[in-house]
Amino acid sequence: MEFQIVGGDLAKTKTPCLIVGVFDKRKLSGPAEALDKATDGAIAALLRKGELDGGKGWLLAYDLPGIAAERVLLVGLGKRKECDRDKLTKALSTALGRLSEGGLRKALLALPTGLDDYATVRATALQAAHLAYRYDQTKAPKKDAPEPLQTLAIWVEKAKRRDAERAIAHGSAIADGVQLARELGNLPGNICTPTYLAARALDLAKDEKALKTEVLEESDMQSLGMGALLSVSRGSREPAKLIVMRYDGGEDKAKPVVLVGKGLTFDAGGISIKPAADMDEMKYDMAGGASVFGAVLAAVRMQLPINLIGVVPASENLPDGAANKPGDVVTSLSGQTIEILNTDAEGRLILCDALTYVERFEPAVVLDMATLTGACIVALGRHPSGLFTGDGKLARELSEAGDAADDRVWRLPVWDDYQKQLDSNFADIANIGGRDGGAITAACFLARFTKAYRWAHLDIAGTAWVTGKDKGSTGRPVPLLAEFLIRQGSADSGR
Ligand code: BES
Ligand code: MN
Ligand code: ZN
Image 1 (cartoon, rainbow, N blue to C red):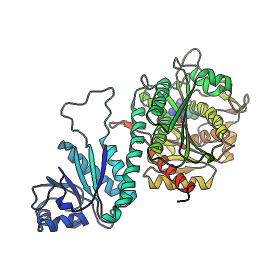
Image 2: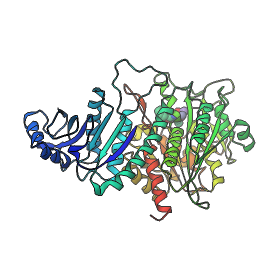
Image 3: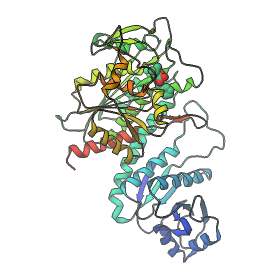
């Protein structure tokens, strides 16, 4: 999707469709008022006659006198005082839904005065791109299906132009990252295998000069001693891959931010096999890895002044004669032995070796993203991602980035009190901690492998995809990660 920032006289600007907001009780937003003047009060007159009172809904007007736009779409924004970024992006969904029904490919949006700041323009661009996304790789589009919008121009006042330009540059880079994550997530497990993910990472490095990709094969992992990761892929015909993407946008000496994402391309549970219902959704078990792809792409396209390393351990988890069995003990790269009491708790097995591996980069901070536990959905539902870290400052930074990016997290504890649930009679640690606090004990497991650096874990089991009729990948937490990385960049360069 394309974005433009435009200024100048709104009434004289040509476009197939001009979108402006109307508040509750038919009060005009700033741009709507300007149009009303240009039309000698035609807009206010129309509102007096029409159904739109400024609450929910829309009203489409053609051939308004004194206006160059072919049509004007008036959209209800609710009460002026209560109208914020969230209400605005919701109203935008209504408007763009209406436009795509009509098959319009281009539109010009005039944001209400006061809601034309960097954050709102960026959120608007991101929302428009989100709505325009269609999955079509393995499915013919429906005949007569409405075409999504192609170009969105956003009108802002002259004083806001610089911020708005930066906002759409960032917004479209983040949208590219979100879209990549959604596409990888939505692809079925028979296409999106570990080998496929590795190939996509190599492609990405071809397209983006600033990016370098390296892929570790099972033989490499064997020589390194990644017994935990390799134990998971042993039950699959698809070889595991450890994907490492590197973007050096910062100073040579600057320590890198490291992102690690669970890339489990299909999770059947292994010998501790899952029930059949909804098992198809376990193709999304690589969503953490997909978010690393997305965040890295967004950082590259924003040309952030940071060094960034994205690491994706990729594997399938299937039952097979060679698969992990409950009671098996494996040795992780860290040297700690692990008793596998449930083969379905495989995410932590592939992550722990990746988390030990990244010590070599001497990271400034490591974030891992994983669809790790059903228990996280039980605890928090599907609105926030679960945030786990012992580092209060990092927790605050991530929470604030999540709020700013409309991609929220909620913190749960990683206290040592829970660690004894992971005691094993036969290994240094067990891979499950019982029914109580399942999302927390999973994080506590990871904590044993992340002592060498600042670390936070995001459990995205409830947020990475939408279940039910609108089943599909959300691209979360790419917006949060992108915001976090932008802030890292500003801190480093002292801006
Ligand atoms: N990928 C799943 C977690 C999951 C389940 C995410 C459902 C989203 C929806 C993970 O590998 C898993 O199976 N976890 C187990 C852990 C348990 C065996 C301790 C779970 O949550 O049931
Ligand atoms: Mn599992
Ligand atoms: Zn899993």
